[in-house]
Image 1 (cartoon, rainbow, N blue to C red):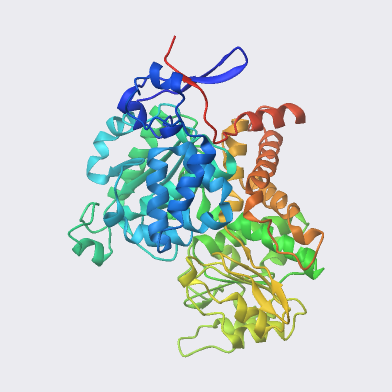
Image 2: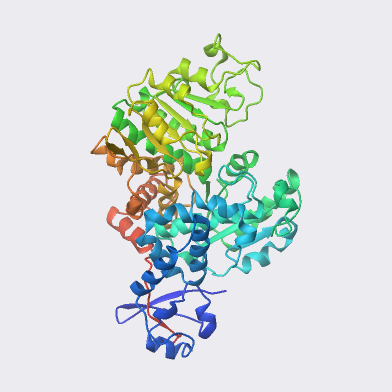
Length: 569
């Protein structure tokens, strides 16, 4: 286990490293490749192991970018970048930083979806921890094998609900690896202090179970008391080995995501990005869109397609913002309408879970509305009756925002807000070009996956990506830098408002709702400051003067640059 130690020598930062020779070249957090200086090569046992020319970081970047451009498709580019990350993390993150708009869709959505589906065939190098259920008695030994002793943040998944692709088993590891890369790229979290984990409870994906190359546990997914005991053992092991670590629950199934969040959020410092992160980034997009439409939040009628963890997370965040504006619970409910595969969520349905019930419309409110043969009120009829100002999709049903649905919304709203947020791209509820065309250019659009600009009447309409990458790195940085003991809904509300304040639409209604990816590091810093301030107000972190708080945040932000290395003195 490596414990990286930074020190200062005559004002110059350096790293004392316990490794030398091949071991040093095989450590991605320390390896510089051909950029090791002559004196470092002599001192660290590298003579003869590298080409004689000492490269600059800029030369290395030029070589790797040329190689990147030779790849034929995004999956090949993803594999290339992952291999670079496993060799030299400084070079990897600097390459991403220099080409963030081009490479963000490759290291995360949508390309990470294909990487999860092909995980067992593209796997080359271990990263993170793999914890199968049948080894839950070995959790202490597994956590002791983590590559770096100090850990600030963990992203964990059980692979059951990967993006809109469903159960990917151990292939879900691509999500924690990708999320943590964004924690570093955007939030500045040191890559050696970030730990991806996959909990392997089996899989119900028949293709994986039948695949002879599948690297995970070939067993039907374990549920019920045995699953709960597995999660409990994992959390208890974290409390023993890494007390105070920030834990992000990621891509757990609908039956577990909110249940686990509610069970553990007051016990360990944790949050669920699919619920709280998705809710916050969508609220931020809505608040930014209001600067374009001119209609206040209290005047919105929001229809959300989907009633799972993402949908109820969005509803929770919008509801919190509406209550902050002074609305009572009944008034909030009248502005939020959830629709899932069985139609409108209302009090006459017996199949609702606890997270959906606060948004169930009173049955008498929808009496007499058109219903299908099964008695459900479908999306089109909800749109016709509610006349929503905003339409949000998180159901993973591609194309379900049909022309008829969109035109029905646009018939009663001057600037319809439409957010097809399901990802990857293949799961999007609508294509932005269609939304712009069907609304005669009036729609205010943001999507979950990246889409190109839309040409309309001789102008280019830029489409913002309403992606959690705008929220969770800043939230994580704020929690870690402040030392907050818990993650609260108030922190996510503060994050959403901080992100909305960064919207280019604040100064130009024709601009996209979110800043470009090149500004993600600055946006994450602003969110971190807001989140830490919220933690301080709630008494969950040390109270600091603004200047000291800013200094502490900046001190935690890692930059991808080479530091001089030397042996321990």
